[in-house]
Amino acid sequence: MLLYIIRHADPIYNPDSLTELGHKQAEALARRLAVNGLDKVYSSPNMRAQMTAKPTCERLGLEYEIEKWMSEDLAWRDFSCKIDDDKYSWVFHRQNSQIKYDKTIEAGDKWYESQYFSQVNAKEGYRRIAECSDEFIERLGYKRKDGGYEIIHANDERVAAFCHQGFGMLWLSYLLDIPPHLFLSTFDITHSGVTILEFKNYEDDYTAPKCLCLSDISHIYQSGLPMKYNNSIDI
Image 1 (cartoon, rainbow, N blue to C red):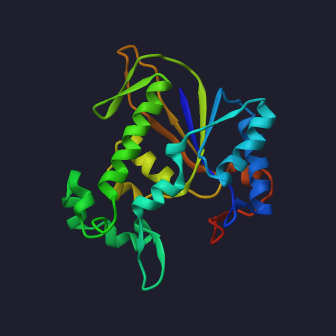
Image 2: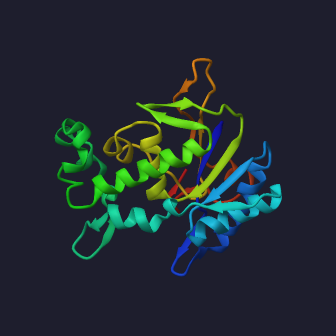
């Protein structure tokens, strides 16, 4: 199975929608995903994710299903805080070298007790995503076991989940079994970026997802759209 985790296109956060550029990115994404097709499509309940998924579904003749647990609002509730005097943001949007340092790394499984996570609901928020992820992935045929997955229904389906940056980063850290403080301070995903995880079907009925690409935006280049990371850095 291939799991495509896709961040929404260039957004308007209020009202929750896409910019003109975002709609073009979503159309480019649909053309890219149509190359090999998809079997199932899921979306966060947030409109910017649904609007990004819509062109792909229309092109492939599919309907997307809403997964409430993928909501960015829930992740924001648990992982946002005041990082400046008057500004709220993701707790992991502070200077990454302040997160990726000895005391945080030494915290190990209790990373959520470290200085930069103790001020948010990190432990319970991450547990919620983990439990919902396990239920979702098991529906697709793979049951969480230790750091990998027991294969209960081997398949070669291509499954897409249209979601968000904050939620998506937290989910990826769990799926790949990489401690969140290390993943969040090392990697990032941009607008309409496509991340692909392979759940390979081994004969011993046990697998671990491998990241084939992270936040790929080749569709943006192919369509001649601006190659900018989050509208801020030319890449």
